[in-house]
Image (cartoon, rainbow, N blue to C red):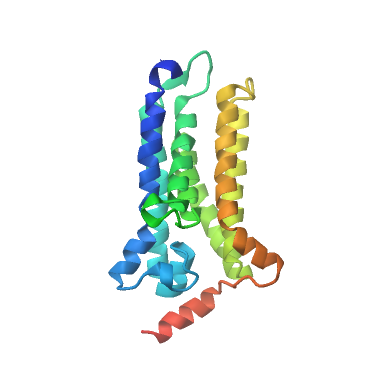
Length: 243
């Protein structure tokens, strides 16, 4: 293993923060909806994300949006893994790739939710966050490609049965987060409170805060009994009638 000296390589964090933020700013929902001669920010809930795209354009477009946004969160993490997988931080056993994956992820999510290109009014970061966790977990164990896929379908099933789209999405993010933190805790059990591991936990926690805060209106409506239902049956019927 090579040594990553923070004092000598801090500029990597600056470069990745800027690049990942602007990657996050690229909104696929807006791009796809414009190809359909509509603006997703002015229809439905106005949110430029997977759920609103699914309601307004159907499952195929919704899946395309989710897939693109998930790649937006996953690919920077994958690149960070391969760039730093052979490095450990100075005087620790903490892999630099474990830290860098989530460092990139935080800034992608910030860019998605607060894009300078959209006057800081973007999506809610769910698809990008799910993609980030899915790919990050698979970097350590390829089996997570299948496990994560199954977990994503569990989220879909929850939304199908309960019709609570926002809560299903948030539970998915939280479930992935807890899983990753437990795995990191077991991995670094001998030094669980090393400064770098603590920062990794804090970044994962920050991603949760960002996504939950982005859904604060949904949560308020949910407690008030006013949250809009996400009925897959109604969506399918709506777009079948429009054909």
